[in-house]
Amino acid sequence: MEASAKARGTGIAKRSPEYVELKMREGKAVIAVTETGDWVGFCYIEAWGHEKFVANSGLIVNPAFRGHGVAKSIKKKIFELSRQKYPESKIFGLTTGLAVMKINSELGYEPVTYSELTDDEEFWKGCRSCVNFDILTSKNRKNCLCTAMLYDPTEKLKEAEERAMADKAAEEEKKQNQLSVSAEGQIQQDRRLRGFKGNIKLYERWLRFKRYVLLKSKKEGGATGSKKKFFLF
Image (cartoon, rainbow, N blue to C red; front, side):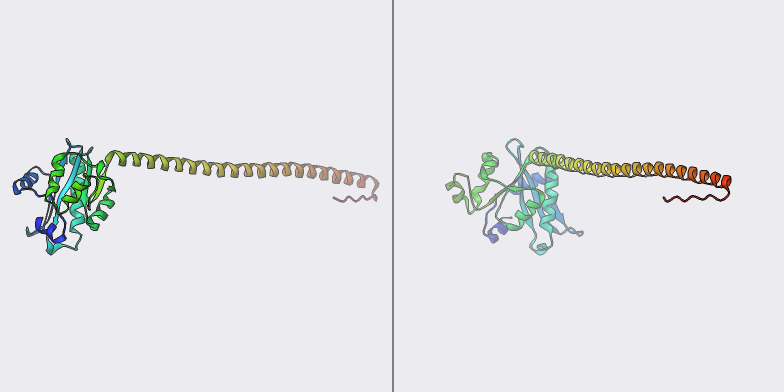
């Protein structure tokens, strides 16, 4: 991990082999290997500030397997493991890598100021081995070359509830519009039906009147034998 950080020209919080081994034994690490057991990549979880914050640290991919989406798969897996073990903790990270920033964004992280990260002194002590530590201290730990990113489960839950409420409101509005359209269609149908019924009654009256006139004409014609009458309708 240290050699990889130096090759990138960045720094990394150095941890002892025993510390990393402990994370593995505690089930707080993700190890990627091939079917034949060749090592591919690694990442582990660290909790800070009485578990109020969690960091996914030490992400490393074997150079022979880089460029195949391994880092993204490991980041996703370690993120899921962090959410499982620390469901109420804020997950954060410091990085200078654009690829890692992109992966974090896809997972729901958002860029934040350093003041929104943990104030646990033990975490910040880990930055002493970074080549940019002088910059961090000169800025009173308020800024550095790394970008701070944070996943806040409380905020995400709030956003999910707001989206659900918005979706529900939109669905209700859609139903109301459908009911309005349906009601308007029913009104028009009722109007046509009333008009049709009114015409039927008028037509029936006209038929009765016509029948009456014709029958009367027939009777009168039968009485005179030659008298004829014409009616125009």
